[in-house]
Image (cartoon, rainbow over all chains, first blue to last red; front, side, top):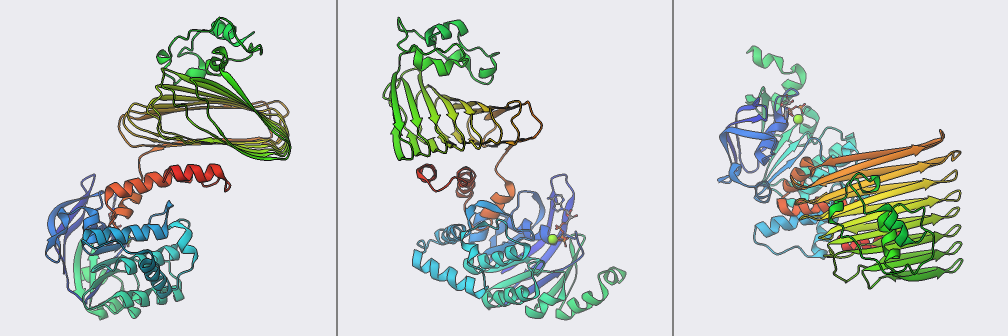
Amino acid sequence: MLSIKNLKASIEDGTQILKGINLEVKPGEVHAIMGPNGSGKSTLSKVIMGHPAYHVDEGAVELDGKNLLEMEICDRANSGLFISTQYPTEIPGVNNVEFLKMALNSKRAYLGQPEIGDDEFKKLIDEKMALLEMDERYRDRGVNDGYSGGEKKRNEILQMAILDPKVSFLDETDSGLDIDALRIVANGINHIMSPEKAVILVTHYQRLLDYIKPTYVHVLRHGKIILSGGPELALKLEEQGYDWIEEK
Amino acid sequence: MDAIARIKQLGMPRRNDELWTFFPVAKIPAPEFPDACASEEDFSGETDFAALLPVAQNARTMVQNIADGSEEMALLKCNNDFGRTVLNIGKNAKASFEILDNKVEHQISAERFDLHVGEGADVEIFFANPANDLPLKFRHFSIEQSANSTVRFSSIERGNGISRVSLDCHLRGNGARFEIRTLNVLGGSSESHHRLHIYHDVPETTSIQFSRNLLDGSSRASYDGSVIVGNGCTKAFSSQLVNTILLSEDSSVSVKPVLKIYHDDVECTHGNTVGELDADQMFYLVSRGIPAEKAKKMLISSFARELFYPLPDSPAKRRLLQVLG
Ligand SMILES: Nc1ncnc2c1ncn2[C@@H]1O[C@H](COP(=O)(O)OP(=O)(O)OP(=O)(O)O)[C@@H](O)[C@H]1O
Ligand SMILES: [Mg+2]
């Protein structure tokens, strides 16, 4: 469903960060991407979403056969792509719940569906907030405004739950979460996940993968996927780090 | 010296006049005055042309007295090019004044407001009118505050012409507090200029100035705010913050903070930021499926609305936020 072929992208000064990424994600799969700091994991998520700081030099990205790279950012999202950023942006003046409703209605408009009714939306948000055991305080505040690191991550998954994307790219959702929050958020992700959907998880630690079992584990280094394997690869990386890979 | 004589003595505003630094003075039409000044008040100490003009044009004066301890809400509207309003607010009174725009459409309009604020009084004065097309609009405020009084001045400017607000505020009693929040939402070739003098005349007084600008087209905004803390005026607090978002290449803002402090034990701060819409915030919103035009509107509206959030729940806050949608 998500197909990334030989993707190369660079930043404004011409430095190439992604140097030919290949990744095939099928429905029902969970892909874990690991790799040292600065290897290009976050960049990959932003490039497929179309962040203006990056220029695509080469390659193709398709979602269900549609060329994502030629689409407006909002259309990429409304077609079913979701990225949860490593450092969620704070937008103080925009109410969190109104923002969620606006985002959901944008998707509905894109798909030619009517706006969601107030009661239906309230039911939806109540249900998802309960799923993620989120505090009522989230409702009245600005988007991520003054949230702690962990609260922001939970709010990202709330958005995922409301927007119900086909492919979710979750960038270090586990970092900043305490032990209980990690369990709650991971369960939430499992709950949202279904055989028609797929998840890409960027993580530095095995512990998230104890909760969300990956189909594949990939190692990204210097802008390339240098090794792929099954869940056991994550365990090996946890033990031995990344250096042995290049030694091979 | 009456107002006509004083204007003649001062002459027309010039660019090198420090009260008019950023204003396109050439656009002010030379006034024709009546034969005699109806008001016998002495204006020899007044230096601002805009403060004198309505008086020199024999503007009708409306006087409103708010009794001690009473509560009052009023709409202020002058139906003429020139107008003067004198508000005498009694001790511990609570008053809310909304200024409505003139419907007259001549070359220039000028209004003057005099506020005498009694001890412990709580006053809000605000305007947030739909865009008006007056080519040139002056509003002058002369405010005197007694001990423990509070004045909150709030405004939204979004006209199509050129407007200038001049304001002189004297904090004459301990515990007096003055707050001003002004928002300019400008496009086309419109201009909005603010010129303030805030005098901390006694110890323990507070002034808060907060201005935000959203400038599109070739619009221009300026903020010229002076804070004067007198000798011996300990524990004065003053802050001034101007935030601008330039939505176009040709729009511009000028900010001139002036602090004249004749004492050590005071806290005065000022800040000025100019930027564009936050690229990360934009990306965040559109990456959630919200179309770029809508996302931009959300960010603009939140930037504007934030200015008025700190206001207490009052007619001013409700009206200003309602106008912003
Ligand atoms: N907008 C940018 N401007 C400048 N450099 C950038 C930009 N985006 C990414 N980089 C650089 O590209 C490299 C990859 O960054 P990226 O954030 O993708 O790494 P990462 O794999 O997510 O690392 P981490 O594990 O620390 O989150 C880094 O060297 C980073 O400094
Ligand atoms: Mg990263």
